[in-house]
Length: 571
Image (cartoon, rainbow, N blue to C red; front, side, top):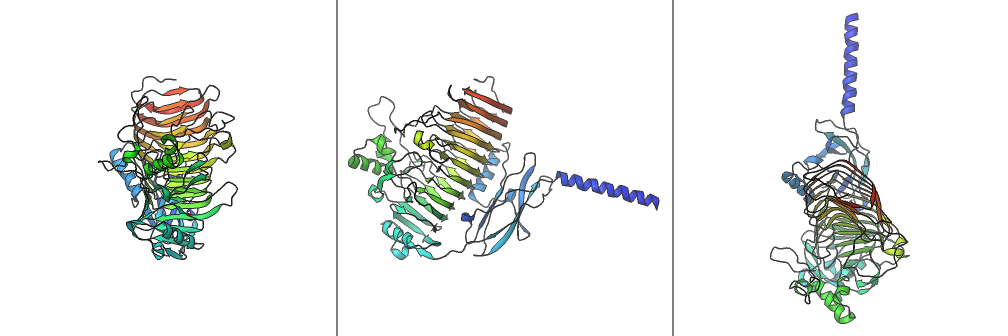
């Protein structure tokens, strides 16, 4: 009995050690599980959560609804962005592996309530404890206002501006304006708060090519305040006005800006200016290849006496939301803007998810512009843009310094192509862009990965920026650039200079892979009187690329940064 007792004690001790080891080996419980409220629909709930702590070897997550497992995220390719993430790794199997830390639960009943938790899993099948638990209720649609009830005709030629505006004006608090299948041509539409615009599958909103379909006048803009055409969809706001709240633009339909003609390859064409000293513009001048883009430039020349350079920067964008808090854009495809795509100025708590920005080769065709707001989440979206993909601005010069910073930004699980920059700060940086996290994105064919650009006159800059766990390939220029020597030929405006030159600092870049860069993989260029500082690069693998360029910068840390065939660095 005594011997048996000793064996029992030994066995018990062994099991205790084994259990302790298993607990130690298991991943940590995920943190920050949430469902962005404005993105919750009548039948779907998006779930997002934070990636694991450093060192956890997590490969995916199990999502539980009402106590039952409904999906394993590393085996889920249910959205177009996730399918592109899968394709990326079929071509680049050695790239840094990103983690999907979002899932959209579909097929739910309107007004139904569900409880969710998430558990992390590793390659050995170990499962973490539960994340925090959240209880979410699907949305109730409210009153539906169909634009066809007011005479809208989806034949692609009838101009429906009055009918659509009337439907929006009649939409009550909490109601939904529905755009059914068809092609609905329209000019400027003013949106308001406490409403949903639902563009259904098979429906397209087509921007009118007529410049007089858009109001021209003074309004606040993320970059500058000046006379310009309003966007196809706009909100009215002046500094000091009460904020609008609760605006949703959702559905599976398309908004087409009708900005440019297409080339033989199916891509939209863009204007190229004549080389310096040339007497004539090239054959693909905006008058040859523009639709709405050219018509507005021509109108400003004839009616306002503006030359092409001044007129060109005043074209309509597709959507300009100013002074709106609690915004969701979900499911929409944007294409072919005459200028930028989605602009959010002085907006807080914005969610952009499951959205496509298809503006490749549209001149100045930025995907998202976010300025002077706090709380932007961008995930599960596709960017194939003609300019910067996701851009952040914070005003110009002495006036911009007095405005609010652009901050609290989270960009993750997106597929990004062709843009001038992937995640971009500037060039208008006066009030600072700060507290930004970009992680778990794949990037293919952009000019620059992390792009920070400004100049002394703009002032401000960017700080507290984290760019991690991103996989990039076919980068035409730089993996990372931070420069205060940038000038924008499309924004030739005069403004009072900032009190201090622009500067970039507290920048962390880690756990990224870069397959091919065309220029200096890392370029950090400050000013003698305002040096960039406190940059940390960790665990970076770069194939290809030219020597780094680093001037007027200090307190730089490089830890486990490898670049193939790089013999010398220019710093």
